[in-house]
Length: 218
Ligand code: ADP
Ligand code: NI
Image 1 (cartoon, rainbow, N blue to C red):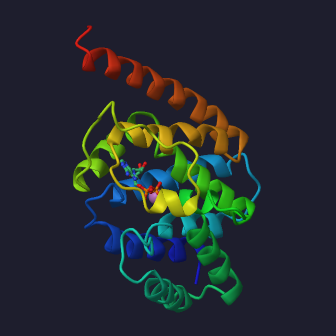
Image 2 (image 1 turned 45 degrees about the horizontal axis):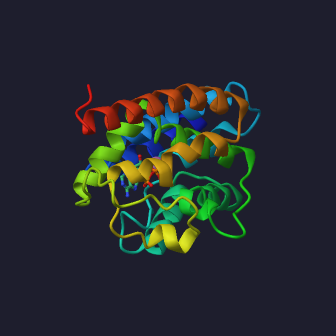
């Protein structure tokens, strides 16, 4: 099967899996991640099929979104076989989608990603910051019953993987300190670092204005 046809089929599969999501992982998130991954691919010499496939599939088996991620990974494996990807390609894609998440990076031994994996991770992380990132945090927090802000609840900025995953009493504003503002320093590729720096400034400006308005000072 031609590569263009394989990518089209992966896109259709991802669309079918993600379009019902209401937690900030809808297909529009996937499309932005794919588009950003393609932009980063212009600077990074790595396999486009692996990169684009992993970008389309990166949230399909997310353990926040499905009860049994292993079952979905198996389903993805079988689907990719039907469109004639090799076992090696399939395992590389699944390694990326399994390991690119933020909480994995907080573990004592964070997984090492290939350059394709680093590109998809950067693209995914860029979509969590800036104006889109702010909107997604509010949307996710609302969908998960978080309050907006409480000055008495202090952010916990040095959590390990387990603590991050078991967070309770979360506020939307604390999420900025617990994840979003850290992402700039965790980007892999030079282009992503540059884009992250601009988006970081935007988020910091937003937070500054938020506190001013919270205290009715402006
Ligand atoms: P990703 O798609 O980058 O893997 P996640 O699955 O962690 O992101 O979360 C989806 C979106 O919701 C991201 O933009 C993320 O920052 C945001 N988000 C995740 N957890 C929280 C939270 N506890 N409060 C507010 N926003 C959150
Ligand atoms: Ni994502």
